[in-house]
Length: 69
Image (cartoon, rainbow, N blue to C red; front, side, top):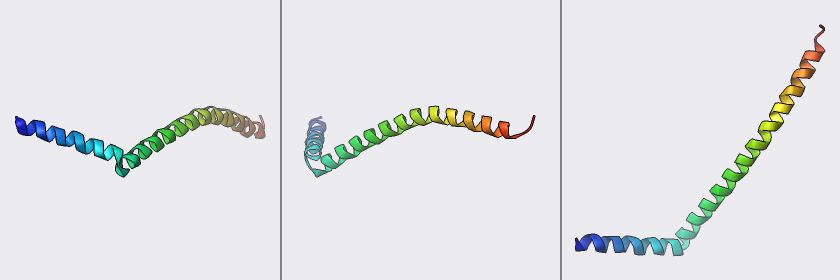
């Protein structure tokens, strides 16, 4: 049982060392970049979804108006 506690203390220490070091900074930068990109793409999806609906309606009217009745 003493070995388990020692092993968990080592994991905690190594985790703290990683978070404070360059590897931790890189991991945080990757996470922030991922969150930023997901936010941008989600916003673009919402904007483009409405724009595509409008563009398809306009294109459909133009295509149908070119054919004689």
